Image (cartoon, rainbow, N blue to C red; front, side, top):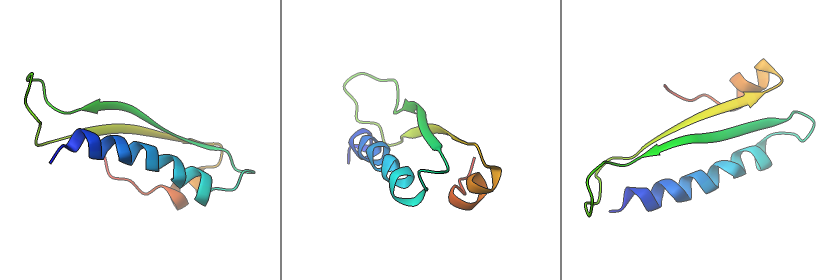
Length: 70
């Protein structure tokens, strides 16, 4: 299983979280800032880490819509 491809699809789907669940009157941004899937050449990694950040103008929106670990 190639976790890089799965992770990339997940990042694309993150954009739907904002567009489908948050009102346009409450701006929010979800950034994927880092993707790491191993360091060896020609090896499909068995682990993928995506680091993200979420920004809203309203702290209640942040807590209501985005309950993420870590």
